[in-house]
Image (cartoon, rainbow, N blue to C red; front, side, top):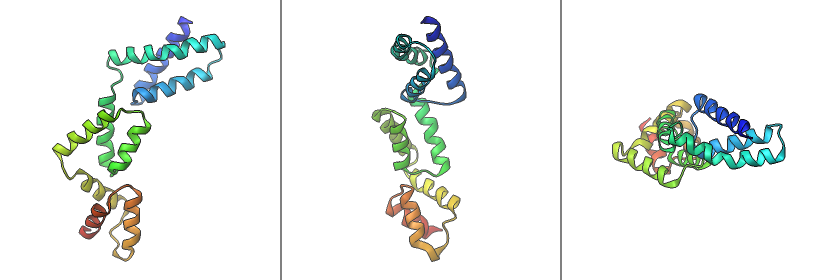
Length: 159
């Protein structure tokens, strides 16, 4: 059983060396890995119970940190032209705590109060939304991407 626990720990470290992950997302991945293992049912039960200890150990050694993960993903989404709604729902799907999400948003609001408008500009450029003939279509594209009506209208008027 201890051997399988070490295998699971190595798998988690190997996964984290390739991909950034939140604690909740890593827990889901480890559970899926355990489900695929060809071991007895009691060993799987032991492994499921050892996930919490593995994640705590990784967090203690600073191999996994939800705040750093959220901050780096937020930067990535800003450069990709994502909206507040998209970013918030992504973090909720990954199991990030609401107070961490709110803290990240507050930090970016302090540093750059119009970050969402800049993100909408990036989205509009990527999707080539400068065509005035299809203003309604462009507004609907921005709305589906999660941008508010005011921001969408302002961005399309500026293009």
